Amino acid sequence: MTVAVYPGSFDPVTLGHYDIIKRSSSIFDHVIVGVLNNTSKTPLFSLEERVKMLKDAVEDLPNVSVESFEGLLVDFVKQKKTNVVIRGLRALTDFDLEMQMAQSNRVVAPDVDTVFLSTSIEYSYLSSSVVKEYAKYGVDLKDFVPECVISKLMDKMK
Image (cartoon, rainbow, N blue to C red; front, side, top):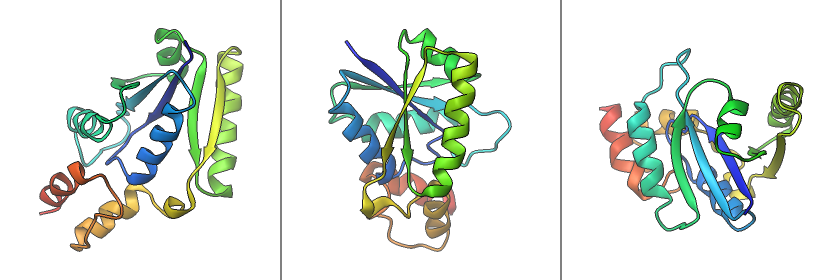
């Protein structure tokens, strides 16, 4: 069974994230969405809230699970007994950063490979930061985040 880890902060999960998760779930036998607890950042949503939103968002994908983690990604990947990391790429600027991270991970864990998926064109502009900015100004979020996230995000912005 091929297991892959799709890591991120998902603050909040967007339709772009969901697109990568769904497409990954058709490639791999099991996808673990790893929600990073990054203590150097102050997220809008708590770790528990982000995990819950993701679980709700992917409930239609039977081979996808959601777990939180902290520390090094490669340690989490090894703990999950896999060697595949999935990363989404929106633009050339993403590629530079993601390639650097993938290569750094290979130095620390030579058996861990990163698979890059290009974001579907309809989500190439989308980021959690953009979504939060739109929510702040009351923009309709139906084209940006899963339905289960909209009210939670709007409540946070009040």
